Length: 371
Image (cartoon, rainbow, N blue to C red; front, side, top):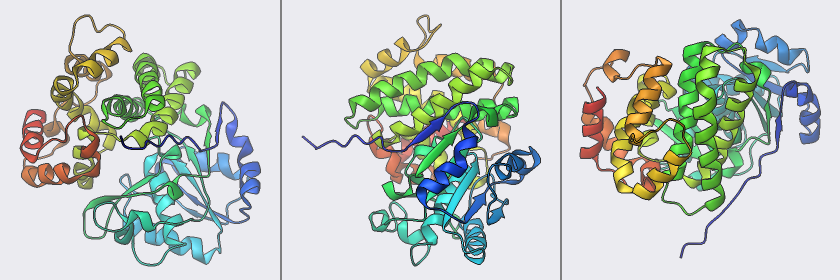
């Protein structure tokens, strides 16, 4: 039997008003000068001022792309070095948090990101990085407690650096910062949370504590997401979704599956990650609930209003009710490159922990069905 590892180590400060402890947490880490990494939407929403009212950054990089890139990380690294920073604070969704992780890595390691990615470099070579504090403004990726940084490299491929040294040293999770999130972005990021719970529970890795958390993620997000989309000012729904997102990030250590294995390479096209997950989710579940029927039954028990439906049908109906796109063609995508994306998905490290790794032919069938 393989020796399992259970690891829940990220300090999380959670609750309305949690942003107020940012200065204290920087002090605990010994960070005196930090780079604030964020994006234009966060600036426009006035959330940067919420941070600067608490503590002043030494520099601000506010040009994080919607899908983070190595090129942007290099620009942010220049700002980090010019201001002589000794830490990074990420303010935003998964894109800003992943970019901040890349900056912290590059600031302390030689070479380029490709040297440290899964499947092409040596992720095990990643050592201690500059301290990172993550302040999420969406309830979605769980990157604030995760060990992965996914970016599009300079060669155009999307790849992930995965190592425990990339886990933020603290996650400050303040639901106040999510209240202004627009409905469709709330839905898209929220479906990512649901996917994390579903995929982690289906994962072939042995980790019973993560299984229990994953079931709670599924139940909590399915119950709270519709209300968060309908009424973004519902503080209870926003708090529940952010909590589900944090817990969804905690179960990444169990591995995900074919949904993310496919949407990660598709993400290099620039489409929103959560929306891609929403479109692909029912089609992957149609396969996985047959590969692991007992797990599918247990997942259904965590949901309301299943009433004899399969998981794939339930998720299809749930996504439709949220108003999210349900076809890749609705995003403006063409079939060009489907075979290449299917082959990349088969090689993705996340495919290894699907109940059974899917083949390129199966991924191609999923893409055609989702088109």
